Figure 1 (cartoon, helix red, strand yellow):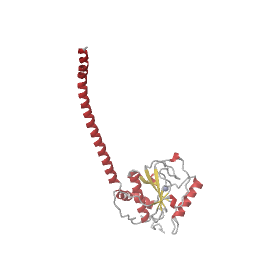
Figure 2 (cartoon, protein in one colour):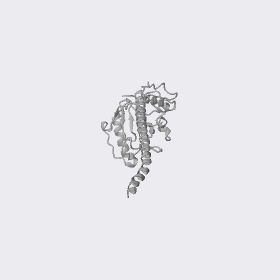
Figure 3 (cartoon, helix red, strand yellow):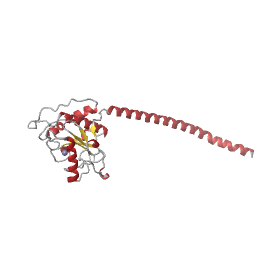
Figure 4 (cartoon, protein in one colour):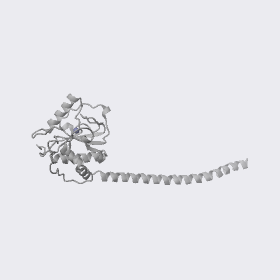
Amino acid sequence: MQSRFFSIPRRLLRSRIPRTFQDSIDAFKLSTMTSFRIIAVVMLLCCGVLADETHQRADRPKIIPPTDWGSKPQPIPTTRKQTPKFITIHHAGIVWKAGADPVKTLQSLQAWGQKEKHWPDLPYHFLIAPDGRIFAGRPVDYEPETNTTYKTAGHIGVELFGNFEVQRPSKAQLQSLVNLTAWLAQQYKIPLENIGGHKDRAETACPGRDLYRYFKDGQLKGWIQSVIAGKLPEIDPGPPLKEGPTDAIPVK
Ligand SMILES: [Zn+2]
């Protein structure tokens, strides 16, 4: 009895010593690994925050919300929800005349689209007046509308008032376009190569030769890149194109 009584704990002891020792090694390894993991996660988080800080340099430009210009949007079906991946730039294609009111233009464009095209809201997400004011149109998380053929899902539509086949954009309009596009690209992590004109997506003259020139010569991307890098580029529209429009859009 006695030997059995003692033999049991000894067997147990024998079998438990290495297990306990092994357990403590395992526990040590585990705690070391856990510490490394925690350090790695903390480092990654720090790097992420730092990386974000270094890239978040384009300030949000002043954007006039739909409630401030008297927008009357209709509900957009949830099937038209989108994740922004591209920025597509347009002109209105209608000559801007001196004295025209950007707010009335927005309201009539929205009403026309609802009546004639069954578009629940403005076809574009942002619209830029000749004086540089930026108006918010359709919410960015819904795809835009188009009269041409291209897959609109994923596109943020930015329209500038005017017809740049026959008039030139104003300096204020170009400045707002650059500031807005830089901020949108930063906000939605859209690469520069995904910023284009309507012409790059479909068969059209939009956004007009005197705006599209800045896409072709790379100036627009350069200005956008500068804003993302935290600089304030001097935007110079440059001389008119050969055989291009000469008159700048009237600002008032
Ligand atoms: Zn267009």
